[in-house]
Image: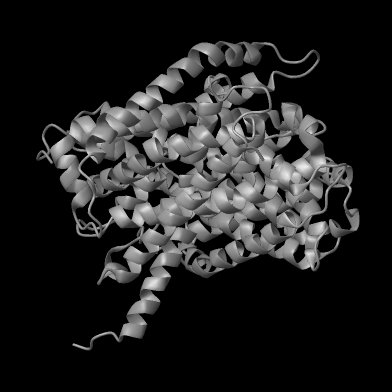
Length: 529
Length: 48
């Protein structure tokens, strides 16, 4: 048998590094992270973020990969199927339902952000955004008009139609790729596109670090806003007592590492027993953390501080989930040499990364529809296409202040994700158990996993999640729920309607799972795993 | 930037960079890693 030459082997390993690190890079790092940091006190956000990275991010990534691979060997690819088998109970499938619902609901608004990246790339290419110059108000106005943030239904008017066209294009593109089963092709292409995104981000970083001061605000002040753990005169402990900051930081870890909402569970279920999950997931987590902290943390927020100032950033009305990156980054591009080219490249590469993320969000639901209803891929894609189209149109129509988008993002990426991540950690730690769980993690592992990881997964991670989630729920949830029933005067109850939509999607998947439970063999009759 | 800001900055940046460098080193130096490491981008979900 012909042995591969060392050069071929190195090239393959280089491809592996690109695959495992590149797959993690995307909108969460460059657009969502700075928005979350700005909304939660800048530097203050970094302490819970780093703690959550170690206590929750790494253990959860390992346990989700291992649990998914374990479930796949038992014959299931969807979270409901895997949980049903692991819990050895029919009702276990309902426990796993969130692992399908969350990616679908996140997709409904994510496709808008994906379209916005392409829209920005197009308008950089054609010179519309560069023509706005260095005026924050002008770029901000472009952003508000693009997403129709001014009023409900704005995207369905003549002014909003161009962006809505991009949304439909992206929606159709995603479903065309997944319907034709050629998503692997675009994902392989992105293996090489994502490093280019990182190179592009380094060039932008160089420009941000050399920006001139605006109104007396220098880059050092901007870095201070991003990294100082407490404002002057405040104690660090007092500022860290806010559970909202901890929830947002942990939610960001989940979102950007793509853990805690069922994606990895489904993908890992297709692995073989001797495939590594330990080094693969750790490298992915590390690549993501590097891009988020080193690139995401040094670009958008320091630049936003210089251009917009601390007063603007301290007002939550001004900074939505993704808006910071779409307002400040174009300003940076507009003030750098060849900014039109780099602006186009950056947003186009972000668009590509968003396509791969969108496709991966659809996979868990497709796996459930296929194995739960016994239908083939194409009808599964058609059903999912209908459900997500309704959701995307709903969020696109109720665009005023991005209320519908923020509501779905809040309940998915800040609320349900905590519940599902905690349940998943407890199932891996206690149902599969310390001994078997550790063996499962170590199977095929290319690195030695420390033994203390199991007490971490069994006790520390769930305790951390339950404590901060408990404090946050007691303090903030009543206010959120009250907000549902008290819309601004004369406005439709968009928050309540968004929650209603979430419940409809949950009901739909509960119905699918009920049908699946009739088809799947009794878990107590199946040989125990 | 305050002293505390510099500490958070250095811990975060050096920690993340160090972890990534260590992982890349392990991937490159482990024989056969190219056959066993995976990401969602290269996992075959039997789509075709």
